[in-house]
Image (cartoon, rainbow, N blue to C red; front, side, top):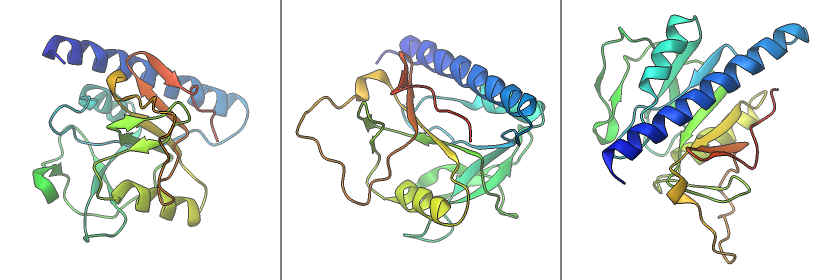
Length: 187
């Protein structure tokens, strides 16, 4: 995909996420529910959509932005706070990570997604980190809203495709073309 299309697509996704979180936070307040206060995102690698401008906006608005850190091989990810001023260091696979501090539990998890189905099944990089992490989060308390972030071209239309038993289905997938199956409802 050409660089200008990637930039335009990432801009569309950032706009949709900004609107989605704002609407859900406003609805929660008006309904007397707890508004989402923290979002776990990811530092983009290679051709992944770059959400960093949005993460900076959220951090500046008082939303806790968290980034994943691999602290142990084959263990769930831990999410650590990030702000635009956080000094980053190289982590596993060369991905920049914030300094280790007190990990936090996110209200929303944005998941890098290579391939996806209309039902929000996700195909990742094969390490199982997000599957283990999402399963652990669901077992240990209220489930966060899970949103796969993908390019439109990653859609899997093969009718024979079957998600593996350990694959965790997400609440929704967001691409430059929009939400699948639909924008997730607040919790």
